[in-house]
Length: 221
Image (cartoon, rainbow, N blue to C red; front, side, top):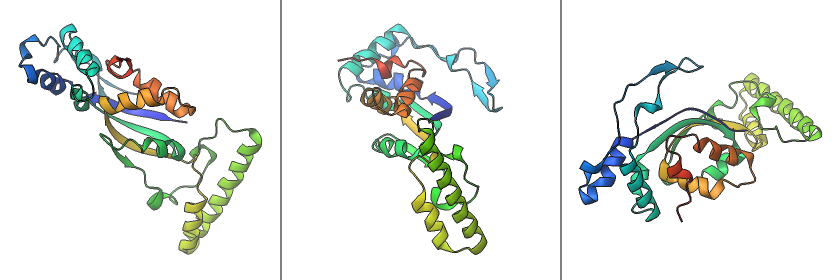
């Protein structure tokens, strides 16, 4: 299971200015910014801005593709297009995500400090692909985790806290607020789009919905 919420992109204006600096070709830029902006609220009543407030022109888009095709050094403007999002995913997915350290930042919900704050439920874990018999085993583990949690809350004995930490399976879902950029997303997309984990394929499908996702998804080789 993976859930991606409250995502936004920014830095387009600076990225376009910067990519034209080497040849002083700013006058050729034909992207439109500051168009009419539509404010609205999403299903969680969070204020949002319509991402259609900018339009990349054909001249700028052609140069973007040319620079990307010339390699990561020439396509470094992609590092300035920033993406932020809230991602909830199992620990086994985060373990692979954490191999991408360059150009990423994350603030996560703390397993160490907050593990006992709420009762464990089956939906705290990714289990959608499990056979029923093994899902029943996970349900039994959830009950054991709650026994350890209750003992820890009753006694304050850290040994019960250790029981929770060391019993916690990698299917436990953790939420992180992440900051990425189009360059690192491009690396992720082409490395992981055919991955055996549904979470990676769903993450790559989300990338395809981003503004001008062709910069991420195009095979420019």
